[in-house]
Length: 144
Image 1: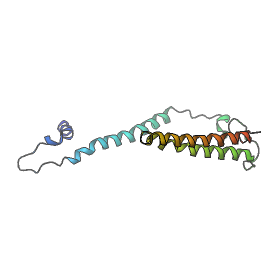
Image 2: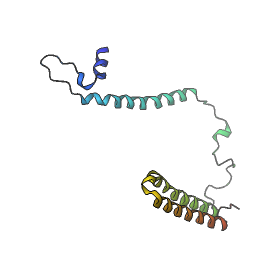
Image 3: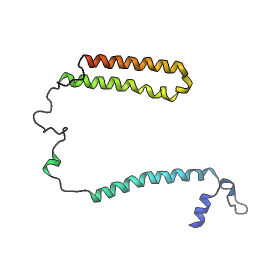
Image 4: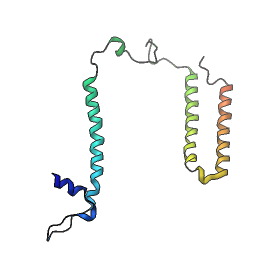
């Protein structure tokens, strides 16, 4: 066992050879860290899930079994119509969220863009702020 570990952990140029044998192939030993990483990546979550399963509380009360709806008691039909304002806020969130995703690639190559990139992003953020202000003035963010 000890000799096997020594063989696996040796540097590529230090492979022992018996007389008359072909040299051992070095690229195989490069996969050992990957295999160890894979084993740890599989073992740790499984062990944590197993410990969680052993320690969990198995007795559920009535409150625990109720459906969760942001603290509101589930009353009425689940297929009731929602207010249009809900969809307006959801769409505005998606629009502004997707637009701000464009900030990340700009930040990655900021040093290559120099002043032109800064001016371009200021114009972009300015358009976003104007759109946000317009939606705010129109009352799109008010629930009632």
